[in-house]
Image (cartoon, rainbow, N blue to C red; front, side, top):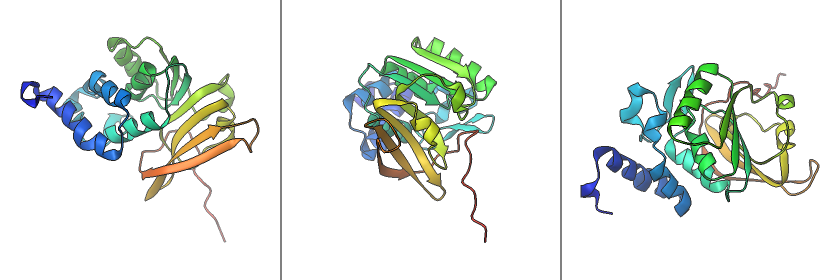
Length: 225
């Protein structure tokens, strides 16, 4: 690509992909192409548009943040979408990850606990012409209110542990990705359901990162002596 012909914002997007995301072992050409097409700057607060491509989390207000671009890209690559999946996302935020998921799957149900953020995400997704994502105002940790099973579940934030009630929502062959643990080390955790029951889960933790907590999910109880 001839960088000299790119506008400043397109050059910033190109540099984000080439300098942050590729070096983080995101090599899936579908993911890289999608990151060049879905306009990340349209999903950030107006005050932070100039920072949209930075290698850090961006505040969205309401004590929430967008994940860093390389973390979103790696989650998207590792969940291995084919275009046929029904996806559950917990933690819509501004809707950017939901837009990426929507472009690579059949349908996305995205749950956001904060009504203001949910409304903003709905507007952002509409402007980006992403029609296969439904955003609902809901507490994603209230698993009884989540009906049905899913091919893919994505937690767009970190949790102390993955509840069994959530992995129970996975279809056979389904995958769940989440960032799990406590600071200073959290691990991206990929859960694949191979059969029914608690023994039918294959779990890998291929890389480390940090991410803000998802609202509503419990912390681990501290040991007392």
